[in-house]
Image (cartoon, rainbow, N blue to C red; front, side, top):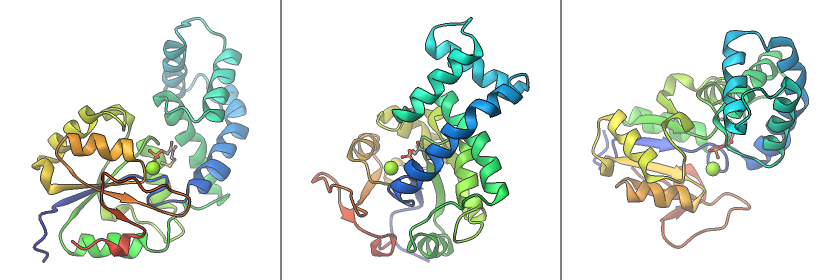
Length: 228
Ligand SMILES: CSCCC(=O)C(=O)COP(=O)(O)O
Ligand SMILES: [Mg+2]
């Protein structure tokens, strides 16, 4: 057992567990290529129709034709907008790609061993990403280190709030039923860490290749540098 004050760890994905290039050069282009046909084929499926209506609401255009919805979604992908219905639809499209073996979820080589070690120490592990919960489970379920989903106790996406807003982290610690100071949040993005710290959580910045270190949070370059 560990004596650390950390009882739970919440990790970001892109830039923290996973190379930004995998998200931007594999996942986003795949969604961009497949989303139009996926929507044309599945627009009447209830789960898809619900997201199409949510896109229309975001556009403030309740009668927008499907073609306009598709154009809007493609624009959001091109500009990396973290819009909740886009993220839900991306997850549905990626499911096909993972299941067909078109790609595996990228994890830095230090991630899986550290997650297993922390789990063995009795820490509860969670994910918080702008990607939908379905997309998170797919990435860790079909990862290049195998199926890591049994290690996780839960997943949070933008339904809990946006990652740069302290309110989202307040809601997460409430759901975890832990004091905020017992929860460690890992991310590459300083604004996300600032929001988590404002909510009382412990924070660590992951400075992977290409990430700029800030000066307001402790930094590590790999998960195996994190002592709990
Ligand atoms: C869950 S895999 C896809 C990641 C994604 O869609 C994304 O927008 C990355 O967001 P993050 O909050 O992990 O930086
Ligand atoms: Mg990130």
